[in-house]
Amino acid sequence: MPESGNYRYRWAILFAAFFAGMAGPIALFAMPPLFPALTEILGVSLAGIGFAAMTSFGLGISVMAIPFAILSPRLGWKTAGIACLGTITLGALITTGFPTFWGIFIGRFIAGLGFGMAFTWPVGALSVWFRRDEMGLATGIWSATLPVSGLLIFVLAPVLIASYGWISVLWFSFLFALASLIVWALLAKQPADDGTRISGYFADERSACLSHECVESAFLDRGMWLVAVAWFSLNYYLLGITSLAPVYFSTVLGFSLFVASALAILPVSMIIWAAPITGMVSDRFGTRRIFILASMAAGLLLCPVIFILGLDLLPWALFFVVLGIVWGMTPATVFASPREIVGPEHAGPASGILNLMVGLAALSAPLITESLVPVIGWQGALASTALPSVAGVVAMVRIKGLI
Image (cartoon, rainbow, N blue to C red; front, side, top):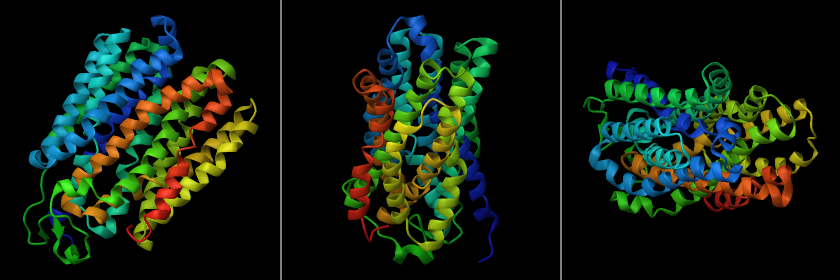
């Protein structure tokens, strides 16, 4: 069908959601490259700085995810985005202005509260603006905010540290969050009433959507929680690896900080292209489940390889390329799922469950992984991050028929 000017504006919405959506991941990834410096400056252990910088962030996400998801429909997704980005900006400012142990803890907790709001409004906006047969592509592009942000901060951090000191990384995080707030406030808007939508649905799709009578029922949907289990598995794997790997590469393997940071973010950078392609292919085949299941299973099979990679750069680089492609099969399909499970009008609020899973992963993965190093060694700790994928496989087997 021909596109109206109103419908073409969906690409502006996608751009705004993408740019603004990078604020939270940049805040999340800003700290791991600083761990070596902060352990020395603050005089705390690796687990200690992980608690102040990452556990606090995950705690904030976990506290805010579900309450804000319930509140967000009353705010609307534009106002919800402004509240989210404003909170992330405030947390980044406090972290930058008070770089002590407890200053970092408080600032990161507030930024985590902001990240706890981060999925409801972009998914809500995309679910309203994009049709079902483009939703995988749209969420695939938008979900690349995480790897793009990670790649940007991990590559840029060594340059900023060398040129302006470690505090400059935190300033960058704050300024980007502020810019994201401005972009979203200026570009986000509801589609005009052109007769193609009924209660958030495209009229010709309404009969094909599985809807719920109220937002609260969306939070009790079994299918959403099964998808959430897989999403937690991926984020635990990703955050555990990316928080520990830079320290392992620089302190144990002797790589430079730049090489260690670039190598650690390599698997995340693979998601930049793998996620949109997977989303587009899942649109074509009309299934999300099979791609998530394949990602979970392949991640588990890759886990033992960590023990035979040795001390050289090339094997680790090749392993991380493959791992990143495997990870990239999950984000687009996960974020396209709420629209199909609970319907477009509840997709944003239901995505609060996915937000909660990120919070729980951020709360647990870095702390547990770093605490396991003295017990089972560096490689054992890194490999342990794949274990929750067992639950992800089981969840995707049980969800058959829903997505």
